[in-house]
Image (cartoon, rainbow, N blue to C red; front, top):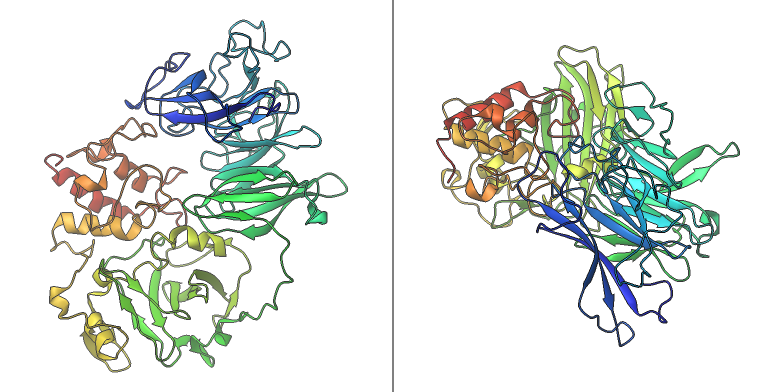
Length: 607
């Protein structure tokens, strides 16, 4: 709303639409073939905001891609309207927008909406007014995707959350005429180097950065000016879309910033922060609630077992062996985990059963636990517990095996550990928030617990018998309803089984490794749906142009007959920050990538 509301009954809205016509014309850069336009419109109300009149489009900026578009608009304490624009999308800023001062993209703009002509005028104190070859609306530059920003309502300081490319997320405090370095730098670091700092004259460093292990899509927040949490007054509060973490940015006596996690709202939901008139903070979740940040109750005692032997899931005298009543299982199409060997177990509470849903997914009762151990040859590295809590949500807990191999210890956070093993050189232990990036609500929480994955024979060592897992679990009463003959039930294909059709093998691989994110509301970018239940046409991959731009010259997600021209293949092969999946792996799955390549070569055309 206009800062002089209700004297000026004007409301302003920022949005992006898939039509052309932005002003200025699209920059000379690779185009997605599906251009968009970001718009700031003014609406006038004659009834105190109960309804709005027709839109008066006062500023339009052409967008070459569908991502990194316009986002927040805010009036500053100076009464001017500020508008954040991403770099135009795709990846690696193909338009060179961040540092090109003759583009609006990759900038923070500042305009005066009280122009007599009804559009806007450029404030005369903008830093680039009268500078040749620049857009006078620019207030700050070198930004990748500043889709959320805010003003400290007491000091007027401007804080921005700038989403990173593939290495660092950053929080910036914006100064007039500041250049924040994209795409020369990302966070404090020079791009293309694993260690070199940006350290470039004329480029402003962020206030704080987060590595991708901590955050993957930063959501800029607000400076707290409420009364309910006195210890946080004057503190910048922000979050991350992917992990759901919310931080308070604290400063020590030497003014060194330290982010502290103060809450979590669940993965892939956190899209905005807002403040009430009283300065209290509200959190907006996509397809979810609007919540208020309130003081936390005193934390309960941390009674979660610190040693694997104390969990009840393993034999306390021999943690390498499962406890009585814990059922082993395996899957048809495994998730790639850097080549580690895996063993899996499940347990459900007494007098409960598993519900087999119509789509083949399995819903486990409250209190269920899944156990997965990762090993490099004979050496155990990690055991991961996944537990369904009383609120119905799942939580992951990582145990690192002790050097003597006799027990494992609960980790409070994720870590990367060098491994001098038979095949591994390092191992990534996920944090609890990283677990739910893949084990999302959209994917049902569990991965692998579905009819198609479990429809296979298994050697039960306790009885020395080979039996189909579906038949076994039904026989021992673990399923709520009979599943019927296994040969009539759905079944995925083993990607490594060359006797099976290549289409089934490839689609099963994508289902197991990619579809937990690439499905509706799964959090994966784009419109891909890689669940095996979808037809090839409905996966939205074949001959579909990538709206986020080319990868190694390829523009389509899948180009029939041409793996090297298919982004789906290129990203599975990748070992840099473009690799897929982006978390939980450090080594490319060459065998899996070969299956995808063979499948793409086998496609004569798209449906």
